[in-house]
Length: 275
Image (cartoon, rainbow, N blue to C red; front, side, top):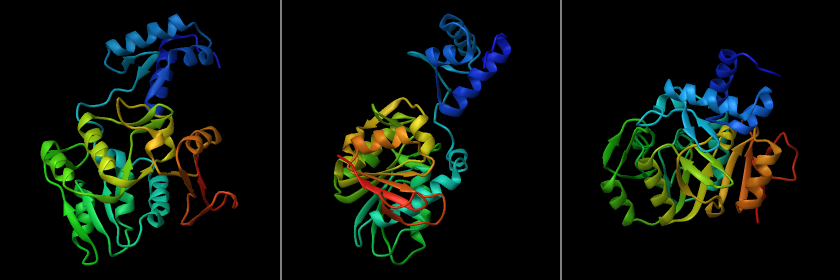
């Protein structure tokens, strides 16, 4: 498809940036049938209007100073997050101490936790999900309230984690790819990194949109992830990357299915060991 008119072309660039979080100058030029110089000029114009942020090789969608609000993120890709949350339940051992971060995908798991666990969290939605249950022990981390993630963060939160040891850290991310796992802001990234550091195992929960997204704060190597759980919307190239890097990959069906080995039919959730 060839876009030759500047307003139409810039609308398309904005759509791509909003959908994927990032637009590449090289890819956009090839796909829209114009020169890379033209795309760079378009992106400069959009950046001057505050509609995108210029980054190396293209532009990214702007992120508010405190990140996208929790409620807005919670209401995106809800079927995928619910599927990933369901598939993650068997990955939490009976009687384990489990750290849950402040991501919306992790919140989908919190409502399904089996009894007998000790939950460590700084997430207000997770705290609320656990306080009404007599079959869970809850260690709630304090700190400064972070509105966008509906969580506590900062030095107090980090200090609370330093005295703990957990069996499993269940983390989410804004974006993930060959260069690592990313968060939208530094405060959130710091707590995710601290949780991974004190855990025997790290489980990463991702809806497939996160594998095409971009975010500024890298907090983990993919190779440091023991198990990654994704939904069935993840494409073959993305799965190949995860399976080549992570120790185990679980693919959750977009229904109430249960995780099973990767050699089983695609209609069921799949689970396969990585390198």
